[in-house]
Each structure stands twice: as C-alpha cells, then as structure tokens.
Amino acid sequence: MSDATTSSAVTKTPKVRFSPQRVWTMAMATVTQLIRMKILAFLVLFCLLAVGAGFAFSVINPEQQLSLLKSVTLGALQIFSIVIGVVSTALLLPKDLEDRTLYTILSKPVPRFDYLLGKLIGVLMLIGGGLIVMDAVLSLILWMRQSLLFDEAVDHLRMEKMDSAEAVTQMREIVARQGLTWNLHWAVWAIFLKATVVTTVALLLSSIASSTLFTIVITFCVTIIGHGEALIREFFFTPNLSGMTGRTAALMLAAICPDLAQFDIVDSVVNGEIVPWAAVLNMTSLAAIYVTVYMFITHLVFAEKEL
Amino acid sequence: MPDTPAVSVNHLTKVFKGTLVKGAFRAVQDLSLTVKAGEVYGLIGPNGSGKSTTMKVILGLLKPTEGDTSIFGVPSSEVASRSDVGFLPENPYFYKHLNGRETLHFYGSLCGMRGAKLKERASEMLALTGLEDAATRRVGGYSKGMLQRLGLAQALIHEPRLLVLDEPTAGVDPAGSRKIRDLIIEFRSRGITVLVTSHLLEQMQEVCDRVGIMAHGRMVREGRLEDLIAVENQTEMVIENASPALLAQIDALVKATGGDTRLLRSGHPRTTLERLFLEATNEAKKS
Image (cartoon, rainbow over all chains, first blue to last red; front, side):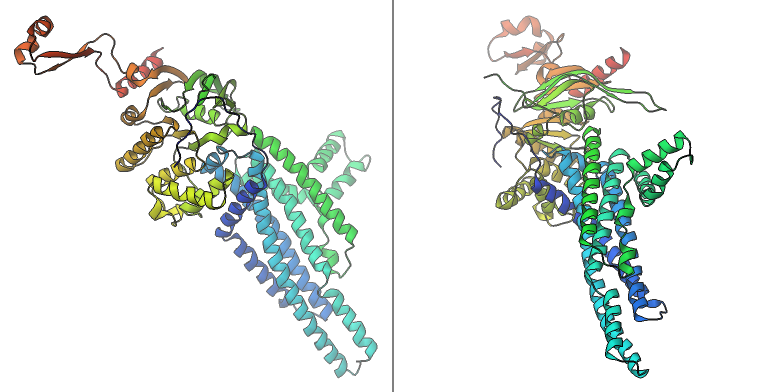
C-alpha cells in the first residue's frame, strides 16, 4: 500500500464528471443483483407457460391459432415486463438506503445522476434481455407452428379436393400474415418501450417516497391512467362535461401521466396488420422524450434528497 | 503555502424538517472543528449527539442548514471532495450476491479504477484486512467483524488521504475490535488522516491524537488528548527507589535527600478519557 500524501498544501482536485464506465458498473451490479434474485428466471418461466397456454385453446383455423398464440404471449410479456420493471425499481433504491449500501457508494466520487442512471439501465437491461430471449423463443415457435399449420391446411384442402394452386397460395398468404414477420419484433420493441417509460416513472416515485409499497401502488395507478389518456383529453375538451375543478384535475393527470396507449400496437400485430416504420419511429421518439423528462425530474429530486 | 486541513467544519447547524406529527429537530448546533492532515481525530458523544449527522454532512450525504464543511479545501457539496475520502458507515452491508473480491472490484470501478491495477489493489486490501481466505465467499455469509474489515478495505480501495469511520468496532468481538484498532494505528503511520467515532473510549484513547466531545449537537470539549485528560489542580510525582519513610515526608525531603533518590518527574496526573467524557456530557445535560 502506498503511503498517503500528508502534504497539506492546497491541491487542485479535478472535477468529477459523468462517466459511462461508472454507469456501466452500476448497471452491471444491478443486473447481477436482479438475476440472483431469480427475477429473469421468473419472467422466462411465466412466458413459456403463456406460450403453452397459446396452444391450449380450441381453434377453428390456422389463422386463429397463430393469432391466439401471439395474443396470449405478447399480452403476458406486456404485463410481466411492466410488473418486473416497477417491482425491481421500487425495491432497489429503498434497499440500498436501508442497507447503507447507498452511503458507501455515494461517499465515493460518484455523482447521484450516475447512480440513478446505472440503476435504471440495469433494470432495463434485465427486461430487454428477457424480452430478447422471449422474442427468439416466440419467433422459433411461430415459424415451426406456421410451417406445420400450412402443411395441415394443404392436406385438409387436398382431402376435400379443393387444393387448387390459387387456394394453396391464398392459404400460404393467410398463414404467413399471421406467422413470423417483422411486426412481431416491433410488438416486442413497443412492449420494451412501454416498460421503459413505466420503469422511469417508478424510479421517479421511488426517489420521492421511502415506501416500496407506495411506489408500486402509485406507479400502477399511473400506468392505468396512462392507458386512458385519450379519455382524459376527451373529458377536458368536451364543454359542459365538468366544472373547472374537474377539468383542472384532468389537465394535471394528463400532464403528469405518460400516454401509454401510444405504445399499444400489440392488437394490430395480433390482427396481422402491418406496422409502418413511421409508427415505430414515433413510438421510440415519444419514449425517449418521456424518459428524458422523467429522469431530469428524478435527478432534481434525488440530488436534493437527504440520505 | 498555507496548510489545508483534511476536514474543516465551520459553524455547522443541521435542522431536520419536522412532519405534521413531529416538530423540527436540531441535530447539530453551530459546530466547528478542524482535522489536520495526518492525524487521527476522534469524535465522541452519546447516542443522538450529532456525530453521524456531522459525518454525513462532511461526506455530502446531507446538506447543512447553516455553515459549511470541506475536505482538503474542497466544499463537501462538490462530488470532487469525495475523491480523497474512504467511508465506513456504522454496521455496513454490501451487495450480498457479490463475494469479497467482487465487492472491492465494484467499489474500485466506481472510483474509475480498472484492469490490472484494480485487481492488484483489491488483493492488497484483502491481504491488509486479513480477508484473503474469504475473498471468494459471498458477502452474505460474512461475520460482523469480516463485514467491518471488508468495509475498511472498500474505504481504502482508491487510496484516499482521509478515512471517515463511523463506529468501526460496533458489534465486533474483542479480537476483531483489536484488529481494527491496529489497522487505524497503521493507517496513521502511513500518513492517512482518520476521522473516527466510537463508543469504545479506551480504544479511542489508544489511537486518537485529538478528540472532540459532542453532546446535544454541540462541541463541549475539543483538543489534544494529552491536554484534555490532564488534571490541572493536581500534581503527580514519580519517584524512583523511594522508601516508605521518604513517602511520608516527600515534599520536604526530596530535594535534601540526594544520592540515588531522585525526583524524576512532576506534573499533572491523568484521568481517563471515559471519566472526562461522562463529566463533559453530564455538564452539558445540566446546562
């Protein structure tokens, strides 16, 4: 160990700036912590069960079967990416404070913003990793299932002596539209973006409140309200529907809560509709704006927080 | 060039805001202290006297209501002030999923260390704190004493010039406690400034150059340990080869006796730091 400098002369201490390496260190520690809490395993297990459930219902035709598989799996991914984002974020900050780990971290030359960003990225890496795995599994199952269903449908047409080239081509198009397409990946991307926005809201609430339960409950309330932003706007803009107080409350809710309905493309994907690039770009930009604004407010709150 | 203290606290007051149920709480009141570079400074006081609050303000974890604090001349409000500080909180916990070595790598990385230098430094700190054998064990399985030593290792990982130790021996068995005391003495010999709080006054007496005694958020005594524990209105005589008869007439005879009997030293006998602490804190309670 080298001796410390006892010279008490005034030394110029360099300013501590934002460091991607430091953020990465925090993010990796968060990912490791969550993985060892078996959170990712829980996500994957549940989604595999959801995939299994997608085959469990009786169906009329191949199109319906593929649509049902996507609907159940994407729905499960949507719910659990949000649940994991909210619960993990609500647990991590109070736990660091309670265990005094936060003291040992922030008494090092670590800006509070780096700590917050590291935590957020860690949770998002876990959700993103889980979604990538599930996207790959679902893609594989859809691809296998669509080949199988197409062969079965052609056999069926042949048995009924309706296997004209035109009928087979039509069947191929129907199955392909409901099978593996880029739209599936866009749906998973939209799920990730929505989970990202909700997780950032949870981080903001977690930096304000000291209670994990409060953070979880309020974030879920914000998530529910966020899905009904269109209703709130309608309420606000419809004259004579409410008094000044109600309209002000509606305006405040609309301003505070993110418009999560903007990320709802799962139904379109399940129905076999094509998601245009522009819609994907819009969703991504909107998520980036929400995350930036919420992180900025979180930083302002956390920078002033007494630990 | 003027000397810059390792820690400077100027007229610090810290008031915690009240709630609807409880009123505001004044934890520290107009506190000033200076820790010189290279010394071991002990901050002692009963529970709730404001020691930990003072440490947190120094480390930038809390904001002062009034006054200011700085570390090596850099205000505590700046993140850069923490570049030269290692902190061991009371009863520290670390991420249970990491082992001892991974924990040190984590804290080292936060301080901008990386690669071979970080690995080497982590091994060095594990050896210094006697945790080499437990380096690959999960921190969740560490004993209290091992956690404290790991806390010291993480505090030292980035070679700080100042160590802030909040109750470093709390809950540690006597052997572990002695080991930590020896480490503090070693840090001083290496020129590291140490600001330490503890309830174990005997140990503080062994390691501190200067002490400050806090009670009810105020500094009630401060100074060099040797000066503080001297009793001004008493005289101590240490005599070599004195006979019982000589002891009875000591004042009158000692100069006249001559020969092998010598008055080696006269001065102020010492009380214990513990007694001084109790007196000082009781005085503050009465006033």
